[in-house]
Amino acid sequence: MRIDLHTHSSVSDGTDRPENVVRRAKEVGLDVVALTDHDTFDGWAAALAAGDETGVEVVPGAEISTNLRGHGVHLLAYLVDPAYEPLAAELGRVRHDRRTRLARIAAALTAAGLPMDVADILAHSPDASTVGRPHVADAMIAKGYVRDREEAFAWWLGQGRPGWAAKYAPDIEEAIHLVHAAGGVCVLAHPWGREGARRALTPSAVEALRDAGLDGIEVDHQDHDDASRRTLRRVARELDLVVTGSSDYHGTGKLDHELGVNTTAPEEWERLRSLAGGSGPRRDHDERTWSP
Ligand code: AMP
Ligand code: ZN
Ligand code: FE
Ligand code: FE
Image 1: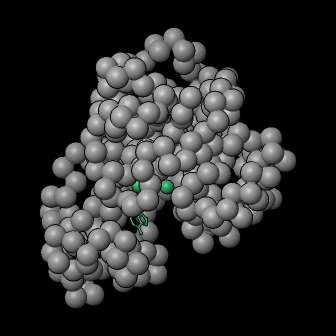
Image 2 (image 1 turned 60 degrees about the vertical axis):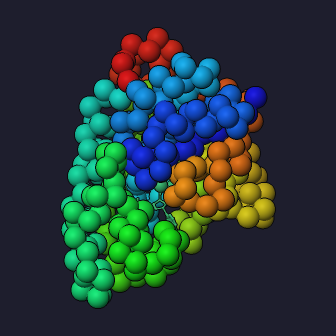
Protein backbone atom coordinates (compact mmCIF):
# COMPACT_ATOMS: atom_id res chain seq x y z
CA MET A 1 0.00 0.00 0.00
CA ARG A 2 1.74 3.18 -1.21
CA ILE A 3 0.27 6.52 -0.20
CA ASP A 4 1.38 10.01 -1.28
CA LEU A 5 -0.54 12.84 0.38
CA HIS A 6 0.90 16.01 -1.20
CA THR A 7 0.87 16.82 -4.93
CA HIS A 8 0.27 19.84 -7.17
CA SER A 9 -1.27 20.17 -10.63
CA SER A 10 -1.47 22.95 -13.21
CA VAL A 11 -4.54 24.22 -11.33
CA SER A 12 -1.88 25.80 -9.10
CA ASP A 13 1.88 25.69 -9.72
CA GLY A 14 2.41 22.09 -10.84
CA THR A 15 2.94 21.36 -14.52
CA ASP A 16 0.68 18.27 -15.03
CA ARG A 17 -3.08 18.58 -15.37
CA PRO A 18 -4.91 17.04 -12.36
CA GLU A 19 -5.99 13.92 -14.27
CA ASN A 20 -2.39 13.37 -15.37
CA VAL A 21 -1.10 13.58 -11.80
CA VAL A 22 -3.45 10.69 -10.99
CA ARG A 23 -2.53 8.69 -14.11
CA ARG A 24 1.13 9.13 -13.28
CA ALA A 25 0.42 8.00 -9.71
CA LYS A 26 -0.98 4.79 -11.24
CA GLU A 27 2.15 4.38 -13.39
CA VAL A 28 4.52 4.69 -10.44
CA GLY A 29 2.48 2.22 -8.38
CA LEU A 30 0.72 4.46 -5.87
CA ASP A 31 -2.54 3.20 -4.33
CA VAL A 32 -3.62 6.52 -2.78
CA VAL A 33 -2.77 10.04 -3.93
CA ALA A 34 -3.96 13.37 -2.54
CA LEU A 35 -4.26 16.39 -4.82
CA THR A 36 -3.28 19.40 -2.70
CA ASP A 37 -3.13 22.41 -4.98
CA HIS A 38 -2.41 25.74 -3.31
CA ASP A 39 -5.52 27.50 -1.98
CA THR A 40 -8.04 25.90 -4.37
CA PHE A 41 -10.28 22.85 -4.84
CA ASP A 42 -10.61 23.38 -8.59
CA GLY A 43 -8.64 20.27 -9.60
CA TRP A 44 -10.78 17.82 -7.62
CA ALA A 45 -13.36 16.90 -10.25
CA ALA A 46 -10.77 15.98 -12.88
CA ALA A 47 -8.60 14.14 -10.34
CA LEU A 48 -11.51 12.14 -8.88
CA ALA A 49 -12.67 11.17 -12.38
CA ALA A 50 -9.15 9.95 -13.16
CA GLY A 51 -9.24 8.04 -9.88
CA ASP A 52 -12.36 6.19 -11.07
CA GLU A 53 -10.65 5.50 -14.39
CA THR A 54 -7.39 4.17 -12.94
CA GLY A 55 -8.47 2.64 -9.62
CA VAL A 56 -6.15 4.95 -7.69
CA GLU A 57 -7.84 6.32 -4.56
CA VAL A 58 -7.83 10.11 -4.88
CA VAL A 59 -7.97 12.14 -1.67
CA PRO A 60 -9.30 15.67 -2.24
CA GLY A 61 -7.11 18.22 -0.49
CA ALA A 62 -5.52 21.65 -0.59
CA GLU A 63 -2.33 23.29 0.67
CA ILE A 64 -3.50 26.43 2.43
CA SER A 65 -1.26 29.49 2.74
CA THR A 66 -1.32 30.63 6.38
CA ASN A 67 0.45 33.09 8.63
CA LEU A 68 2.15 32.29 11.93
CA ARG A 69 3.52 35.43 13.59
CA GLY A 70 4.63 36.90 10.28
CA HIS A 71 5.99 33.66 8.82
CA GLY A 72 4.38 31.89 5.88
CA VAL A 73 3.37 28.36 6.93
CA HIS A 74 1.69 25.81 4.64
CA LEU A 75 -1.21 23.77 6.01
CA LEU A 76 -2.39 20.65 4.18
CA ALA A 77 -6.15 20.15 4.44
CA TYR A 78 -7.93 16.92 3.49
CA LEU A 79 -11.52 15.80 3.07
CA VAL A 80 -13.12 19.20 3.66
CA ASP A 81 -16.57 20.04 2.36
CA PRO A 82 -15.76 22.40 -0.52
CA ALA A 83 -19.19 24.01 -0.18
CA TYR A 84 -18.51 25.17 3.40
CA GLU A 85 -18.69 28.87 2.72
CA PRO A 86 -16.38 30.37 5.38
CA LEU A 87 -13.45 28.24 4.17
CA ALA A 88 -14.26 28.71 0.47
CA ALA A 89 -14.50 32.48 1.02
CA GLU A 90 -11.15 32.60 2.81
CA LEU A 91 -9.42 30.69 0.02
CA GLY A 92 -11.07 33.04 -2.48
CA ARG A 93 -9.58 35.96 -0.60
CA VAL A 94 -6.10 34.37 -0.74
CA ARG A 95 -6.41 33.69 -4.48
CA HIS A 96 -7.59 37.24 -5.12
CA ASP A 97 -4.66 38.73 -3.25
CA ARG A 98 -2.27 36.42 -5.11
CA ARG A 99 -3.60 37.98 -8.36
CA THR A 100 -3.07 41.54 -7.16
CA ARG A 101 0.39 40.53 -5.92
CA LEU A 102 1.40 39.74 -9.49
CA ALA A 103 1.22 43.46 -10.29
CA ARG A 104 3.40 44.26 -7.27
CA ILE A 105 5.95 41.61 -8.24
CA ALA A 106 5.97 42.76 -11.90
CA ALA A 107 6.54 46.37 -10.79
CA ALA A 108 9.33 45.33 -8.44
CA LEU A 109 11.09 43.27 -11.13
CA THR A 110 10.69 46.09 -13.64
CA ALA A 111 12.18 48.56 -11.16
CA ALA A 112 15.07 46.15 -10.61
CA GLY A 113 15.84 46.19 -14.33
CA LEU A 114 13.89 43.13 -15.49
CA PRO A 115 10.87 44.46 -17.43
CA MET A 116 7.78 42.32 -16.67
CA ASP A 117 4.02 42.64 -17.24
CA VAL A 118 1.22 40.80 -15.48
CA ALA A 119 0.10 39.58 -18.92
CA ASP A 120 3.50 37.92 -19.42
CA ILE A 121 2.99 36.01 -16.18
CA LEU A 122 -0.61 35.03 -16.89
CA ALA A 123 0.49 33.62 -20.26
CA HIS A 124 2.45 31.04 -18.23
CA SER A 125 -0.46 29.99 -16.02
CA PRO A 126 -3.26 29.12 -18.47
CA ASP A 127 -4.93 26.47 -16.25
CA ALA A 128 -4.18 28.02 -12.88
CA SER A 129 -6.91 29.11 -10.47
CA THR A 130 -4.11 29.94 -8.06
CA VAL A 131 -1.22 31.97 -9.43
CA GLY A 132 2.11 32.23 -7.67
CA ARG A 133 5.79 32.96 -7.89
CA PRO A 134 6.56 29.78 -9.86
CA HIS A 135 4.51 31.27 -12.73
CA VAL A 136 6.51 34.49 -12.43
CA ALA A 137 9.64 32.34 -12.58
CA ASP A 138 8.37 30.66 -15.78
CA ALA A 139 7.81 34.09 -17.37
CA MET A 140 11.35 35.09 -16.34
CA ILE A 141 12.76 31.92 -17.94
CA ALA A 142 10.87 32.71 -21.18
CA LYS A 143 12.40 36.19 -21.22
CA GLY A 144 15.86 34.73 -20.70
CA TYR A 145 16.38 36.37 -17.28
CA VAL A 146 17.04 33.08 -15.45
CA ARG A 147 17.65 29.45 -16.33
CA ASP A 148 15.10 27.76 -14.06
CA ARG A 149 12.62 28.29 -11.20
CA GLU A 150 15.37 27.58 -8.68
CA GLU A 151 17.50 30.47 -9.93
CA ALA A 152 14.47 32.80 -10.11
CA PHE A 153 13.69 32.15 -6.43
CA ALA A 154 17.29 32.35 -5.26
CA TRP A 155 18.03 35.70 -6.90
CA TRP A 156 14.74 37.50 -7.46
CA LEU A 157 11.59 36.05 -5.90
CA GLY A 158 12.58 34.69 -2.49
CA GLN A 159 11.85 36.68 0.66
CA GLY A 160 14.18 39.69 0.86
CA ARG A 161 15.09 39.53 -2.86
CA PRO A 162 14.29 42.44 -5.25
CA GLY A 163 11.12 40.89 -6.73
CA TRP A 164 9.57 39.75 -3.48
CA ALA A 165 6.11 40.96 -2.43
CA ALA A 166 3.98 39.95 0.54
CA LYS A 167 0.62 38.22 0.12
CA TYR A 168 -2.42 37.88 2.34
CA ALA A 169 -2.78 34.65 4.32
CA PRO A 170 -5.11 33.77 7.21
CA ASP A 171 -3.77 33.22 10.69
CA ILE A 172 -2.89 29.53 11.02
CA GLU A 173 -5.16 28.88 14.01
CA GLU A 174 -8.07 30.42 12.11
CA ALA A 175 -7.26 28.17 9.14
CA ILE A 176 -7.16 25.07 11.36
CA HIS A 177 -10.54 26.06 12.78
CA LEU A 178 -12.03 26.54 9.29
CA VAL A 179 -10.74 23.15 8.08
CA HIS A 180 -12.31 21.38 11.05
CA ALA A 181 -15.53 23.32 10.71
CA ALA A 182 -15.59 22.10 7.10
CA GLY A 183 -15.30 18.51 8.39
CA GLY A 184 -11.70 18.05 7.30
CA VAL A 185 -8.34 17.29 8.88
CA CYS A 186 -5.11 19.25 8.68
CA VAL A 187 -1.40 18.47 8.61
CA LEU A 188 1.50 20.91 8.81
CA ALA A 189 3.33 20.81 5.46
CA HIS A 190 7.15 20.55 5.50
CA PRO A 191 7.33 22.37 8.88
CA TRP A 192 11.13 22.62 8.89
CA GLY A 193 11.60 23.00 5.16
CA ARG A 194 12.43 26.69 5.17
CA GLU A 195 14.43 28.69 7.65
CA GLY A 196 11.69 31.17 8.58
CA ALA A 197 9.07 28.51 9.20
CA ARG A 198 11.61 26.40 11.08
CA ARG A 199 12.29 29.24 13.50
CA ALA A 200 8.57 29.85 14.02
CA LEU A 201 7.61 26.17 14.36
CA THR A 202 9.42 25.24 17.55
CA PRO A 203 8.15 22.13 19.33
CA SER A 204 6.19 24.32 21.75
CA ALA A 205 4.65 26.25 18.85
CA VAL A 206 3.64 22.92 17.29
CA GLU A 207 2.14 21.90 20.64
CA ALA A 208 0.05 25.09 20.65
CA LEU A 209 -1.18 24.24 17.14
CA ARG A 210 -2.01 20.71 18.31
CA ASP A 211 -4.07 22.28 21.09
CA ALA A 212 -5.78 24.41 18.41
CA GLY A 213 -6.72 21.23 16.55
CA LEU A 214 -3.82 20.34 14.27
CA ASP A 215 -4.05 16.63 13.34
CA GLY A 216 -0.63 15.78 11.96
CA ILE A 217 2.76 16.80 10.64
CA GLU A 218 4.48 15.99 7.37
CA VAL A 219 7.74 14.47 8.55
CA ASP A 220 9.10 12.76 5.43
CA HIS A 221 9.60 15.51 2.85
CA GLN A 222 12.51 16.25 0.53
CA ASP A 223 13.16 19.58 2.28
CA HIS A 224 13.87 17.74 5.58
CA ASP A 225 17.25 16.14 6.20
CA ASP A 226 17.55 12.92 8.23
CA ALA A 227 18.17 14.72 11.52
CA SER A 228 15.08 16.93 11.03
CA ARG A 229 12.99 13.88 10.21
CA ARG A 230 14.11 12.08 13.35
CA THR A 231 13.38 15.05 15.58
CA LEU A 232 10.02 15.80 13.94
CA ARG A 233 8.99 12.14 14.27
CA ARG A 234 9.74 12.32 17.99
CA VAL A 235 7.84 15.60 18.34
CA ALA A 236 4.86 14.02 16.56
CA ARG A 237 4.91 10.95 18.83
CA GLU A 238 5.12 13.09 21.97
CA LEU A 239 2.23 15.28 20.82
CA ASP A 240 0.19 12.31 19.54
CA LEU A 241 0.07 13.78 16.02
CA VAL A 242 -0.31 11.74 12.83
CA VAL A 243 2.96 11.36 10.86
CA THR A 244 2.81 11.71 7.07
CA GLY A 245 5.34 11.47 4.27
CA SER A 246 4.79 12.86 0.78
CA SER A 247 6.44 13.98 -2.43
CA ASP A 248 5.15 17.55 -2.89
CA TYR A 249 5.18 16.67 -6.60
CA HIS A 250 5.04 19.67 -8.98
CA GLY A 251 5.67 17.87 -12.31
CA THR A 252 8.70 19.41 -13.98
CA GLY A 253 8.30 22.51 -11.79
CA LYS A 254 10.34 21.14 -8.90
CA LEU A 255 13.26 18.75 -9.19
CA ASP A 256 13.79 15.81 -6.84
CA HIS A 257 10.09 15.68 -5.82
CA GLU A 258 8.97 12.69 -7.93
CA LEU A 259 5.63 11.08 -7.02
CA GLY A 260 6.08 8.51 -4.26
CA VAL A 261 9.58 9.67 -3.30
CA ASN A 262 8.23 9.77 0.27
CA THR A 263 5.10 7.93 1.39
CA THR A 264 2.73 7.73 4.36
CA ALA A 265 2.30 4.53 6.39
CA PRO A 266 -1.17 2.97 5.89
CA GLU A 267 -1.93 3.04 9.64
CA GLU A 268 -1.12 6.77 9.81
CA TRP A 269 -3.41 7.47 6.85
CA GLU A 270 -6.19 5.37 8.42
CA ARG A 271 -5.91 7.36 11.61
CA LEU A 272 -5.94 10.67 9.76
CA ARG A 273 -8.95 9.65 7.73
CA SER A 274 -10.81 8.51 10.83
CA LEU A 275 -10.35 11.97 12.37
CA ALA A 276 -12.21 13.63 9.46
CA GLY A 277 -15.86 14.55 9.64
CA GLY A 278 -15.85 14.68 13.42
CA SER A 279 -16.99 18.26 13.92
CA GLY A 280 -18.64 21.20 12.29
CA PRO A 281 -21.68 21.57 10.09
CA ARG A 282 -20.60 19.07 7.49
CA ARG A 283 -22.24 15.80 6.51
CA ASP A 284 -20.31 12.57 6.92
CA HIS A 285 -17.66 12.73 4.23
CA ASP A 286 -18.06 9.06 3.36
CA GLU A 287 -21.52 9.81 2.04
CA ARG A 288 -20.00 12.16 -0.54
CA THR A 289 -23.14 14.30 -0.49
CA TRP A 290 -21.16 17.10 -2.11
CA SER A 291 -20.31 17.06 -5.76
CA PRO A 292 -16.67 17.97 -6.33
P1 AMP B 1 3.95 31.40 -3.67
O1 AMP B 1 2.87 30.40 -3.47
O2 AMP B 1 3.65 32.34 -4.78
O3 AMP B 1 4.33 32.14 -2.42
O4 AMP B 1 5.24 30.56 -4.12
C1 AMP B 1 5.62 29.48 -3.31
C2 AMP B 1 5.69 28.23 -4.15
O5 AMP B 1 6.89 28.28 -4.85
C3 AMP B 1 5.67 26.92 -3.37
O6 AMP B 1 4.78 26.03 -4.00
C4 AMP B 1 7.01 26.31 -3.54
O7 AMP B 1 6.92 24.94 -3.79
C5 AMP B 1 7.54 27.00 -4.76
N1 AMP B 1 8.96 27.24 -4.58
C6 AMP B 1 9.56 27.82 -3.53
N2 AMP B 1 10.89 27.87 -3.72
C7 AMP B 1 11.12 27.30 -4.93
C8 AMP B 1 12.28 27.05 -5.69
N3 AMP B 1 13.49 27.40 -5.22
N4 AMP B 1 12.14 26.44 -6.90
C9 AMP B 1 10.93 26.09 -7.36
N5 AMP B 1 9.79 26.31 -6.69
C10 AMP B 1 9.88 26.90 -5.48
ZN1 ZN C 1 3.74 24.77 -5.05
FE1 FE D 1 4.41 24.02 0.51
FE1 FE E 1 3.30 21.88 -1.85
